[in-house]
Image (tube, rainbow, N blue to C red; front, side, top):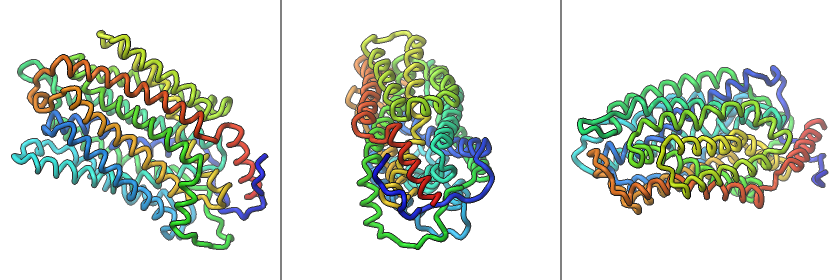
Length: 480
């Protein structure tokens, strides 16, 4: 057992309300369903919309994604501090109130990114300005304002680590369902064949698809707000000591568990988003049919729905970190093997892709429970939870991984000779560019998966035994 004394004053208590149950799981699932109607839409179609429809070079889009995520280092952490310190008169509404306030603004901001009339601007600069302004409005302001409190809320819905594992799985299920709709259904809608018989992305169809996704996001947020209960609240009888922001941030960033998870999450998002972002280019350019992205996404996502049962069992029996390490090693090996095999048949490649995605999903279904373990570890070691701030720092690392993926996609496509001006007219790419697209879609995410496993093994300290120790310490404190 840990040597940390259990007599330390508790920062939190459990509020008496209805028992944790299926209502909370389904409600939390709808929250990520809502998030991913804008997040997955952006990671899947933003780059290809602005290169192939609007005509902006891939490198310029990539630079935007990287700069925006660096900026988010400030906006995310500021939002986390606001969530932790904003006055709250009603116990149990510290986090969910933000979902009600920001649901509509984030949906509107998302839709604005895909307006087809931008392609008709005469000025290239005007196109870049629209792309930049709408992306910052969505990602750096509105999405941060809804995602930080939503993600932090998992740590207060239940104090039980097994119940939190279920929340993580149901959250990931919501993301998977949104991903199925966006990655499997939307390609059938937004890709058309031009007069020359070439598969292209339709700007007008993309615009209306984005508007529909925004409406669905608001509906999902409403379900989340109505169904979820916050149970772990600040102890109303505890002495209120406002720790300085600098000291609080120092304690957060010195949390070894958080730092280890940040490295793993950054590499995970880099791998996932790079693979997701390259998928459209792979099928549209290398295999010659953008509509193939639909069955690939379907078979890469639907099998993972069984993890709603399997992932909590894996976590309870083997530990979350241990399960994640094994799954990411297998995913990396499969993708690297696909690169060396140089698969010319798209159906065979989809089989390899589906296996890799299933393994990635095993870890991804549990990853939200990792951050609640880290928040517990923060309370054990410092006596303060700082839910919003801890989650904000972690969320930024995920965004940074996404941004690096976007930047690397843009830079790498330019490096292998991809011509966005030619793509916007439906022209064929050079063979060197096509071979480069195939290499980028397999080798980079494969290596990234292996790095995730190494980060969890060597850097992340909260293996199964340590998590159980922390839970026992907090239970003893609250009991006293």
